[in-house]
Length: 188
Image 1: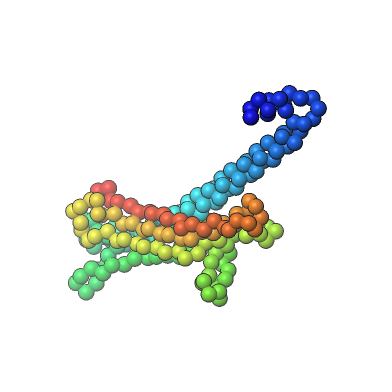
Image 2 (image 1 turned 30 degrees about the vertical axis):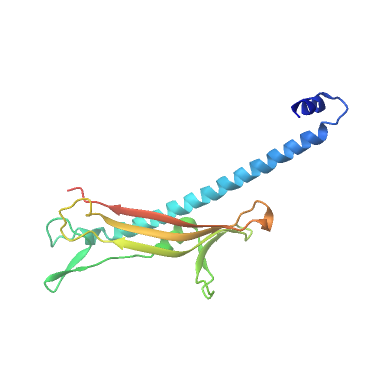
């Protein structure tokens, strides 16, 4: 088989031309597929970083409650209330921060699946959309002596859908769940 290919490539009559075209087209298809894969991963990484930045902003907003001056020692976001302490958490508006960071617009408010936030190109094509944001804030325990559990933490998940432009309409869009975590632990 390899001798036959070598013979075709050595001939001067042009019979190697279709083989060269086939190899070139195969390489173009492979390169296009690899490029699309990297595009999808770059979009997913950018969305993950933006969600994490928005969640970190929310965690920072809780800083004033986490280290309340009424108590000594490490504590979570608690406020004194009627002789006891009551948990106080501020979830903030993560979607608003995410919209600002990524330049998203809200769409589909009346749709059965709920609303989603999307980014479009200047000519109106969908770049990606996100929806179903879930934020779980875990408050640090009240005056814990265990430093490992004394971390104020916010975990979030969001669904991301990116249309695949390789192969036209033959391939479904990439839909993944993006998970992030942000928090802080007292140093003293």
